[in-house]
Structure formats: C-alpha cells, structure tokens
Image 1: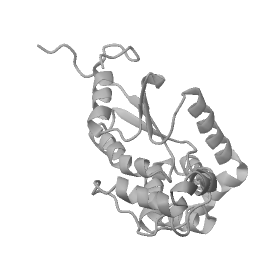
Image 2: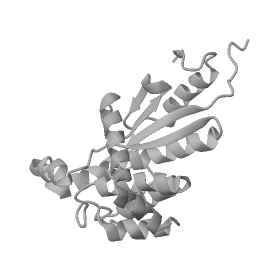
Image 3: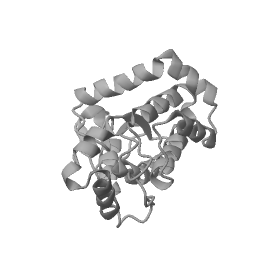
Length: 225
C-alpha cells in the first residue's frame, strides 16, 4: 500500500561551501546528481562560507606542528586517495597557494548576479584550477582566466564587484551562515533550516532527505526522516 505520493513542488537545497575545501570538491558530484535526478523539483542555492578565509592562520599556523602547508598537503592526498572521481595536483598547497578563498567567493557572488546560469560552470572551473592545476585562485589574473574558460563576460562580473554588490551578497551569506549555525564546508540545508547535513555526507543520505520532503503531504511540515 502506498502511504504517500510524491508531491509536484519545488524544494530549495542550500549548499554552503568554501571553494578551497577538498570535501566540497568531492561533494560537488553529489550536488550534480541531485540536479540531474530532481530537475524541476529541487532548486540549488549556492552559498559560501569562510573556512579558508585566512590560509596562513588555518594552515601555516594551525598545522605548524604537523608540517605546515606540506603536512596539510600530505594529509589531503591521503584522505582523498579512495575517491577516484577527483584528481589532486602533486604540488597542491605546496606552492602558489591562495592567501584566502574570499576573492574567489566574491567572484562567485558577482557571477550569480551577472550570469547566474553559469554559476556551476564557474565553480567547477575554479576548483579545477586550484585542485588539478595548482593555480592561485586568490589572484585576479587566475580568476579572470577562469571566468573566460567558463564562457562568462568578465566585464559584467567586474562591474558587479566594483559596485560593492558582490561583497554585500557575500556578507549576507556569512550572516545567514551564523544564523543557521553552519559549522563548515560542505553543508546542505533543507526544509528552511530544519534539516542540516554537514561534512562528507553520502549521496544516499542526501537523497533520503529530499525524497521524504517531496512526499510530505504538507509543504514545510516535519518529515518522517
């Protein structure tokens, strides 16, 4: 006997991440799967949180007793060795490492304003530039070439940045991050903040939450999961 049928409604999945976070890089495949399987039912809102806003503090100082940037690099390569859908450059975090993820986040907020349809493409290019090609995505020259590779009109993005709107939008992301008590990257938010999935969460867990919300008879009601 069928207890519930899937409702024809649109759910919002808010995805918080830091572009320099390798676990967010890994999780992008899960976000893409949601977009493909639930096209027309789930809308994805990309938001950004600051985990690597000051890499000298987080890695240079935070990992000082464990080898600094080199020790952090070794840790990442070991931690992600079982994931075959991503590639890490052998010199990742050893050379040309960004001072901050903030410039890339500002660019992403500007892209959302100037050419929102290219948001996912730019985000993929940014992570590819950093994780696979070991480029410093904290510098404007790399950010500009990344936008060009993604087919985005650079002048339009630059205008949004120069206006201050992109910075204001990023501040709104950070404000909501604190209000929702987002712990880090990546974090999936569903059901107006009632369901929060943080960290390296498998696709099956994400999908289970989505399915329960889609078949809930009252939009926004507490789900069975």
